[in-house]
Image (tube, rainbow, N blue to C red; front, side, top):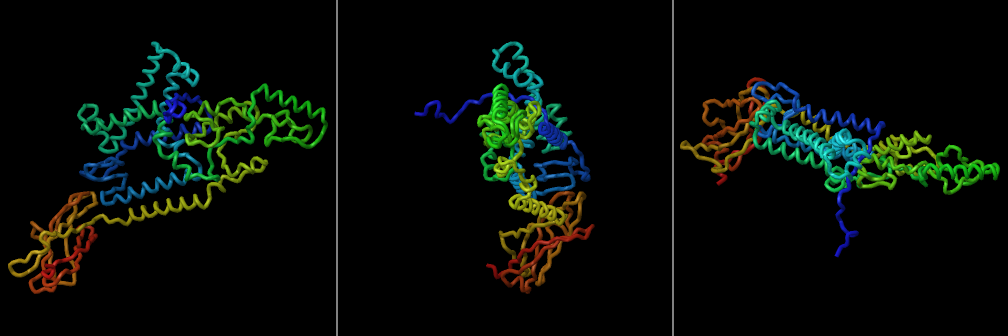
Length: 511
């Protein structure tokens, strides 16, 4: 029977990240503003596509089975565009991870963005790290209830706005907003908003790092994407160890200076890669082996980490490379007069060189590697192929499906007739008349069911299904034989654009 120490489950310990300032924190704020702005603002952008067509710039029209993105319109049979974009997204994730580690997780992942926003609200309502820790441990009181309810209310409002913005991508935003205000929205809209509100509130407020560690599969995949040349957030332990507090550091430094004066000039001893103020640097007396490194064990890197890990323990699955520990450590290094970069974006392959005091390779040597170039070439190739396919796709299309029951009909005059269901697609923003025709080596004629002419009107940005009959005279070879190849054509009566689809004609010999 498993004991508590063998348990596979550990209850969540609340994490209270400390406020930090620095270039990476500012970058995260900027990315948060841009991503949230895009998410909330895009559904309200208008785009004129003509009468009877949606004027929302970005719209996933489930009822009309269309995806609109500004001037681009994707039909159901063109789903390969969406599949191509998904493949590009995956390759882009591989590329950035191989080059810079989990930058997606640290800066642009929705879980990270909304968690950052929730922490900002938490800090604004309850105070910084120490105040939130004291409040968490304090017994429930009127003040604690007031602060928690205020925080949860703001979280809930953000979550409702998140769910509401998402459903705006699937229907006309102003119309849905009015329906929501007047309580006339479809139950599906209310259900989607409720579900997204609950998940945002729970994931961003109470399951922050657990989503990244347990629910998200990417931490387990990233190991295959990264190698020793990947630039990622890491601790220069050869420069920071052994750790020492202020008094111990002063005592060791004074002992080293005393030894230096007593021994006189000499060469030897241990020399740190970056010398401490007041310490000999290899010339003079020997430096004690227990001379502390630059890390003063202040735990600033741990206190600001939203995942609650210690980067000094090495690479960890929970690390999202948000780089806030770099900002915190650089601030401390500046205060104690030591060079910045004790925690930094570094590649493990550069560790031996840095230990010996040599300069690491340039950033571009790590980024422009064959593996990354291959990812980029593949990513760019798929993108160019999608753009090319987008520009060459026709504005009119048709598909032809022969009617198989029966495969042919013998008319009273001995002629043989086949029926076909022809689906016409008009991608123009106005109705168009299409004229149908047939080409083949045999003597065949075409007619349209229900009309005397061979012209069919197709509404704007829509498709029409019509039945077409192809007939072979009684004495024709096509009527007597097995199958005859033919091609059904359509022509736009306004632009003259043509499209066709191949099919076969079944004669009496097919019995």
